[in-house]
Amino acid sequence: MFTISNGIILKGQDLVPSRENIVVDEGKIIEIKKDAREGKIIDVGGAIVCPSFIDGHVHIGDSIIKDEGYSLTLSEMVKPPEGVKHKALANASDDELIEAMKQSMWDMVNSGTTHFIDYREGGIKGIKLLNEASRDIPIRPIILGRDDSFYGDDPDLSKVKSAIRKILKVADGIAPSGFGEITSDVAKMITEECSRQGKISSIHVAESESNQIESLNNDKVTEIGKGVETNFDQLVHLTNPKSNDLELVTNSNQNVVVCPRANATLNVGVVPLNKMLDLGIKPLLGTDNVMLNSPNMFRELEFTLKIMSVYYKSYINPKDLVKMATTNICGFKINNIVKKSVILEDNFAEFNVLKSFSKNPYINICNRVETKNILYTINKIFSI
Ligand SMILES: [Zn+2]
Image (cartoon, rainbow, N blue to C red; front, side, top):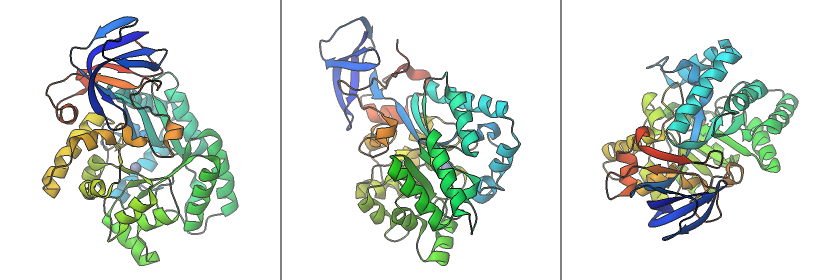
């Protein structure tokens, strides 16, 4: 048991700042009160106590080819099966993959991330490799698998069905790459089976303008429209929405993930995050492919804060941004699987204690705190 004393706690789903002590016992927050003092007392001298990060979208497998293929197009880099990453993944040994994934998970842990949602390539074997790699690391991967049988214009639906069932036995859900690679029948089979089993379905949509145009030309509906229609739990990117795409998503209440640094690296646009927030969408923030970006949420937060200001010439609220990296997961179906907690009594203790440089805790986190300024990371796996 220990007490974090003299910290500014960002409490609850809305991250309300409050100068109180926080008592943790066996991985749970048992008390939050001004004068609480139990067990070992850790005076953090006015530091910020913020929920630990959830990285909403990662491809950890491509940790083996960091920075390779820089300046190639989106499809040249990541489109299955010919993209740079898929060729590299096909040629890597299991040991190389495990080692590279371990390194990235330690990078995440060291920069305050306790959960990440991963698009895992390589079918059942790929899922098992990530489970093995994460075994001794204090981080919770939420693994979304896929299978090669999903792809093509005329897939064998009985093979797809059987692959979906096998994957869901070992994974938290399923994430095919995008609508350009699968038919709508396959998409529906994935979302229906995930929903039936209480698992997560997720897909990339509208990452590039050309994805959207291709979708409109072929099927008269945008990728976002397809994502809403087929009812995926989680839509990733939405960088290039058309006409009423964002309104559709707002009404569907699907979980959205945006990845501004990955979009910038791949030269596909700047996500209209300000419009999303105005509409009431509460996205998560993701670092996306480890080949493109470090899986470090502080870097993502600062980049996002500033690119929005430069590109749209309007400010986004830094508090909304910190929520995208922490508590926005709550309120969505997928939080039942992730079990990510906000800072409240009786919840799991999953928070970072961060050095405070300024009076505004939210700008402080986005604009000043670096990995080296994490004083403690507390999560239910590790305790002081
Ligand atoms: Zn992705």
